[in-house]
Length: 353
Image (cartoon, rainbow, N blue to C red):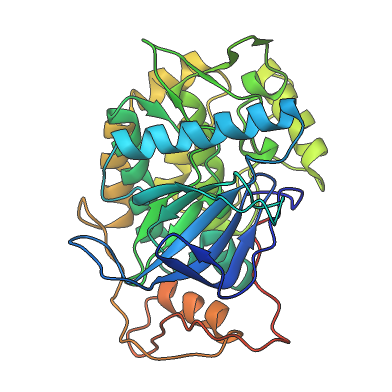
């Protein structure tokens, strides 16, 4: 998630159906996420804790309302249709009925599998995590599962990769995802520009949105791979705008990739193929994510279902989360953590950038 204009303030203890809000987890341009616990009798498959993703689809201008509802519907449709180990799980959807609080009244709530943190949080503290290759194998597996089901993510980036308690990765935030119609899909005109392929930096937009293909996710995976393994972007520039200009020139043949010398040769070839300047060249070099996954698994030296070391539960205080996540991706087996619902008031909640 990006930005913070969509933040929805929900007090601790607020009830959403059988769920009780415990604390804020993250805010973005479209939604706010809160940790919650189940307070009633739980049926089969209902967890004791979850993440509530709240989209303010009630009180907004008609245009904003329509846009937010479309985003919510996209994510719900995908998560209801596609059940895969590397995609975050949807448990339920609810609509808030609270006329006394206009900001909450009519809001859509997605009850989601709760993660321990996100990849961007890890990268802030360990720009080149030792277990980066295993994480990349899990991310690529999720991308393959998504494409195999006939969907394009459209906004793959570290903030949209969540890490679970056992250290495994899940793809999340599907509000700009799109279902394929043949070779193309139609997505909202929104993406994170640092992870957007050259052909979509200035896209043509019609009444259905932007035409997008699976190769856009392959490009994003190439950028993400370089970031995870080297701590830098493969296209030079001190700002997003500068890097987008370089990407445009690269697609025109007037600029070259400048991959980090720290990138191992086997990964260098994968990144170069993922970052082929055009859709056609990307398809010629990577074919599909099944082929890409075999190469990534081989480069990472992991089995098809990569798992990082499982951590022994232990309670923590809020500021320890980032360190614990870093320990997880570094492959530590003696450091452990679990989320605690009580957070000191002075502790600032993490946000997705």
